[in-house]
Image (tube, rainbow, N blue to C red; front, top):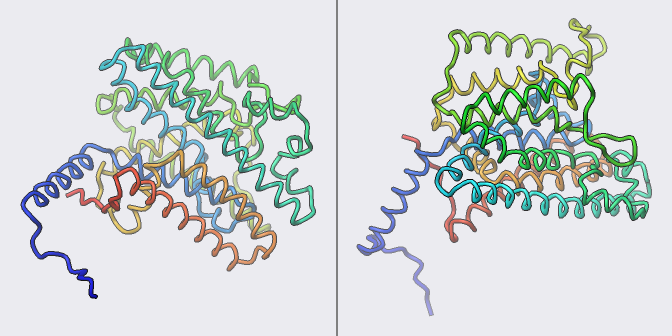
Length: 397
């Protein structure tokens, strides 16, 4: 018995019409969707995975070594911008109550994802401790209080107060989304009604050291939500206004100059840290770049990069659909799922390197394998959501 696997030369008319409809819908979606958001959110996820591996050689080439900000600012800025694009029209189309309901539905999804991720994270660390017979790994990830069996620690997990290393950005995003409905309601009247109170809260938080309590007692949130909400509010305002933003003359030039200066300073810091023979030419106070309180230089750094991208990178640039760019775009389109995977993979990578050694070959192998798994996972999610059709690289032309 033989099986004919040849495809018919000409599809039936109905199939042809359906194919043309699918292609037209796909190109319409590509034309409407701003692929810059997907690409740079995917790139931020790549950076998060790489930076979460201790002593990783590839972390020398991520954003924090070329700017005063890093992947966290990228992730929060893009999340705020896309949140405005996603939820602001709901308030106009379906009413305020439905808009609030949709946002808090997303909050619940993030909360469940965080608790689920915490369980997997704890299991990974516990297994690693058992194999290595070394409690220092748990202390390094700041999860020893939970694994020691204290019942209160789990309650603090549910309250988002216990945040081990690598598990502190989702609680921040949850806190920011909790305030998003009220921010959008204010900005519907006037954008400044949302930005000015946000700026005042940021100033008070940085000057008076306001922060959310953490666990154990005496610990605070690594990402201070009272400070980080200002960057989120700026991104929401830009997403709310979109093309109607009144850009001051010379803003692009000023942004380029600032980004160039920040790049020179950050590269010098990275080189002087890696090679003691290279002097630190810019001994600036560390408080100016404190990640917890989000000082002005970090905000200006990410905003300058955003201005350059907005002004110089087309929404549907051809390289977004290239073989190198499209996998990054796919990851950015499934940011929550891929982000959770990056945390799991980072702990696994740390475990593998602790057993095999931190040689250059081992590090490159672990990094390439982790990034490949992220891309394959995003492709699988796209295949599932599209009803079993593998995604095609779009042609923006």
